[in-house]
Length: 169
Image (cartoon, rainbow, N blue to C red; front, side, top):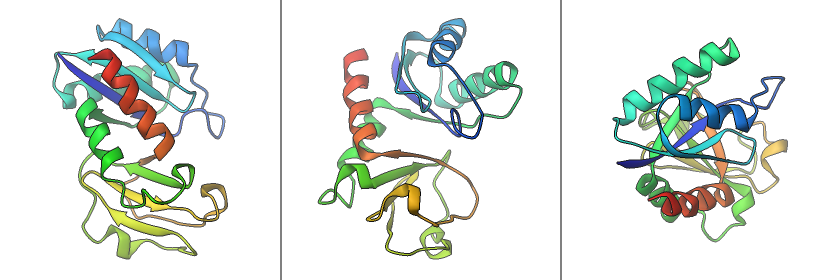
């Protein structure tokens, strides 16, 4: 049994509403064990004996049915989330101003160089994520990354997800 974290992209923003109770119920319907959500931005923790790719596909298919739209889900294991937290190259910065942007697979090696609209942001390549320090705040940023699109979580959230995942193990 593996503990997974599903990170949903673009829910509860721009009119795309998804109640976390519904997300938990979807996980239960899919047969995932010990499902729980964390904050309303689309973070799902659960255990499953299925492979990561199967878990991701099942969630995306079921969310498409439920919401009538594509909802990409970046899936990580508990150890991967803990590794992302530990590998933060901006650990000396306020965690609320540093985000990990998660991708389905490793982003292009030149994604940092391809970024546009950089003002005071600092970027660093991770494994299947990039880290961004937003000194002026994420909400004010004009940073644009090339496709593939990912989903961002600040480092406070990443650390909390790592902690909650340990509780499920």
